[in-house]
Image 1: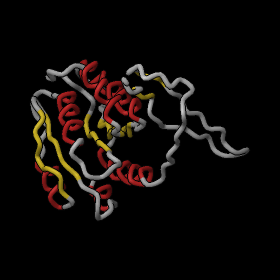
Image 2 (image 1 turned 180 degrees about the vertical axis):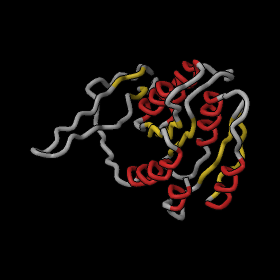
Image 3 (image 1 turned 90 degrees about the horizontal axis):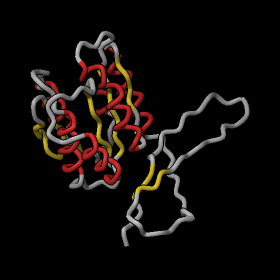
Image 4 (image 1 turned 135 degrees about the horizontal axis):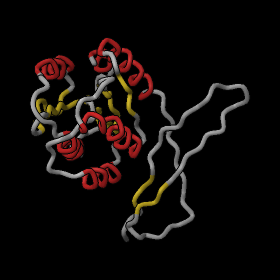
Length: 202
């Protein structure tokens, strides 16, 4: 994680939410890498897990960010067994938020509980909706490599805009699909993009 933080720009700002049985804002918006690193080092996994509640709090908090581009990074096994918010409620917020969600999935090769077994799918669903993705990690020694890869990916993106044929202001969710035709003899390309958008209601 330190590699990811150290690769940030001076104007970048961060906040940290820790969660077990409930989410808690540990560090509010700051540009201090040391402050964020200190908070992360103090987090100890314990008890039940309220991942969906943490996502909800993170999406609410990130509305107050100053920078236009917003990224929410989740470090978790994806298990949830103590949230009061439902997947449906949180997924609705993810669709509306204009925030890209990425995850570092700390997965056990032999998950013991139902929540742990569902974790990879939950994280994959949360990230894909927003145009982000999950970096699966089965060995904690590899987390630095994943952080470095994420840092590079965030700084090498394309902004694609289009005007839909359907201009109805119906307030409904409109699914979109982005496909890329690679140049001849190029390696296989994979696209990560938002799954859709809500049209304005009026």
